[in-house]
Length: 346
Image 1 (tube, rainbow, N blue to C red):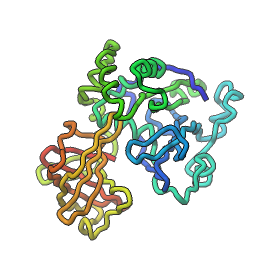
Image 2: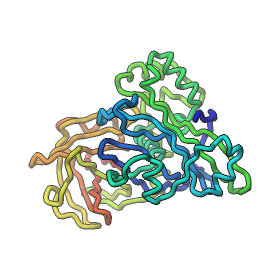
Image 3: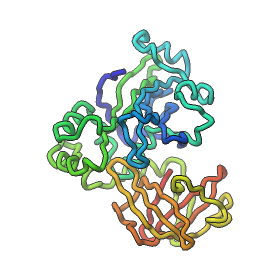
Image 4: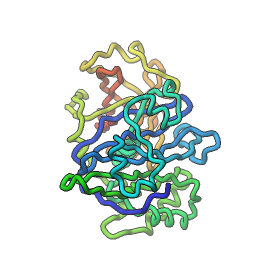
């Protein structure tokens, strides 16, 4: 499928809700899946998502795991009636219908659902990553042909570019019979090996009010996004100095599962204090920052950060004091770093 290119800006006021995050991890690597989140001011928003499947011959390589992926397009529609209402349906014969049924998911994703541990919506997840790196969402949503051309001209090969976007079809609330179809291209990302070229490109590219240099290089704060995020699902935490409201999570290092004996007896709604020392810090343009931390007994965890106030504020050797709690699903939730008040939302 080659979607039409269109630039669709969004104001902060338009985003009034967000879905609960779900996570999908295949035993051979991470795959991306979207159920069609209604985060736009349309009734019954539905979504087409670029899905990356583990593939030893794929040309998309994860910077986090080294896993190779191949890219597929998955069309998500919530009902047959919704598909039938799309103009020129004959041109969309490969549209797939799916819901929350595991059998349907398995048919569409082409994976054995018994190997699936978690699911997540890539659109919202990566948007949070960008906000966490202080990108302005309206800035990174630009014409994909323009930004790809710029990166190609800067010497970054096409196969090293990751395109992230979604084709959304929404029913306009004012007129339910009217369908709007547009391609919402959020950004183009590339690996850290091309960071210098990206910085050089950003320094020369300026689009009026949309200053890519300011957002991509200086990592200016996205206060509007923070305010919007605070209006979503919240978790009440206390770090010893003050109260915070945010969803937070610590992710174990690959192959490691934190247990109650490692981290103390955690109960739903009960906070516990524990300390870690940062032993490795990883940052990547367009990806979450990652810290590998260890406690006094040598137990290690990886913290995936999607929001932080200062790039690299928690460096190797720094002590991180964290308050953790278990939610009703048994996930370990953590608010880290008393000194800097960093928040790591899920």
